[in-house]
Image (cartoon, rainbow, N blue to C red):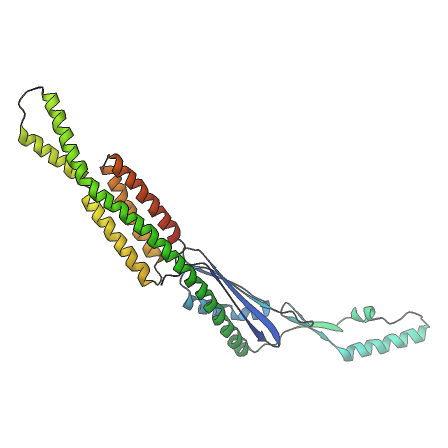
Length: 294
């Protein structure tokens, strides 16, 4: 089954006693582009995360975010620590100063908080293997959720493709029916015009027939309609087989546009021109939807 390039997946886990939420969003993009956003203290996992996503997703702009619940003692991957021995020394010295000088000022928490090195910042200690094991498991769950949505949207796209392909096939059949009639009508009009211009003068019937045959061959669209119908069969087979087919479908539609443009340039018949416009409209709708296919 075909898959859409758009989707959303989410999972939750716990790391170091804190809740971790992983979200993945996939958007349309010509190639695969992975953008990862996560706390600085998990930056060492970036390459592993992108590699894992490259293994599971082939096309689209993939945005993965990892959010870790804040801890009262954590800030952006750094941990606040209190040097109690140093603070006790500070407090003891301040008390002595206060007593020695007979000061009335209180030794407040605000004053203690401003003391140098009493409160300091250190990096969070995380075991790399444990972190990757936890994050990778949750990442796989989020990807599975993403894939489920991509496949669901792919089913809707498949139905839409079939609808437009069926309409296109009907217009092609109309072309196939009308084309021989156009050729006959053209031959009759040409003979009548030549007879009118000749004004009773004897004309070379063989030469006239030869010219008619040449013009009929130039305006014949049978070869193009056969190829166009064949492309539609191929399109149906590709979307039924599924897989990563977005680029292939886009190329196939280019070929189909080429055929219908040739048909339009060959024939000046009003009914054929109408069908050409309808087919171009359906092909435009198909191409628009193909941009959503992985």
